[in-house]
Image 1: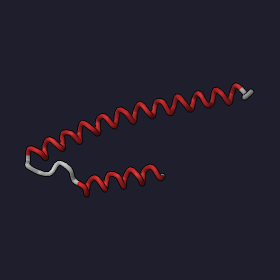
Image 2 (image 1 turned 90 degrees about the horizontal axis):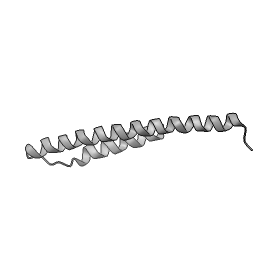
Image 3 (image 1 turned 90 degrees about the vertical axis):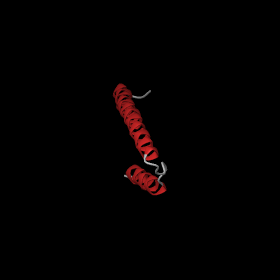
Image 4 (image 1 turned 135 degrees about the horizontal axis):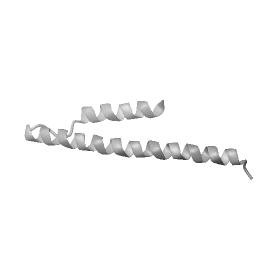
Length: 68
């Protein structure tokens, strides 16, 4: 049977992960709202809503950030 301090530490770390997960969800929602507004503005201006170059840059930044 694991020591109580071991179990408590795991529980503490899981709470930290849960807090981070909540922040990620919140930030993803904010990001989606901003992206939607950008798409609306671009559509109003008659521009292509999808920008493959920008999409590639964002994906590369995510990959680089995840690798750290």
